Image 1 (cartoon, rainbow, N blue to C red):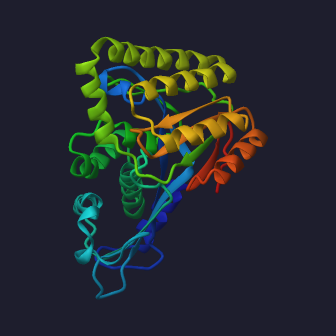
Image 2 (image 1 turned 45 degrees about the horizontal axis):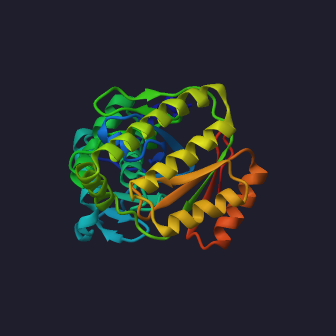
Length: 336
């Protein structure tokens, strides 16, 4: 079907001539770290999950004749020339993609992203992945996974300086990923079971200060801090084995152990701790923060959709600013 679509575009589109049936679409999704927050900075492994329940969709159409490039997002709509500096990364990617694909007509691009910003869910990477896929779809040109990642880095490097690449890899992936710093990213193809509930604490995560706090602890309390980081790495190794066997109860217990160590490292906060306690009391097998911490999101592992519904309701009643339910073993996803 994709080949047929590409052929139709070639039939109906001639150079320098725009027909309005030409549309490009690209999709991606959020990501979370299941296990390995903070310890991954020091070379220990992390398990990252794609969250298909939290999508990002980019649509590209030719702009109305004589009109400038136009961008529509949740917080800005207007000519690209007047876009805020916060959009510098994706706009630089837009320019480079248009140049490479020889797209010379003005474009109207809509970024429809449900991925919240500053929550450790890969919002900028999701946008870069979806934007790249949309451009290649618009141009009817094949796009390899490796090339997709190189293009995403154009935007991510501007926004984050020297990103690890895990956000872009996971927001593009259909399967969980095993990540170790400076090592190849490994897809985890074992079928996942259970249902994940994600809740936003309503406070932006403070990744920078949290990472700095752990670095300071390594200087002032080196033995205890290095032991905690090593234990977090061991939990990730155990988590990989447990995912292989499908033992949800043990995986939930590992999430709880992980959270205790993150609390020791001072990267949790009262709002996250409260939501985590609520989720456990409502029946979650395990719960922890995800991402940098000191704000942002928490995750809760549930055995089934019924339990996930109860946990989701409890988190909403506890004033989580947003919640998502992501069944790990099916294509069915729900967003609240």
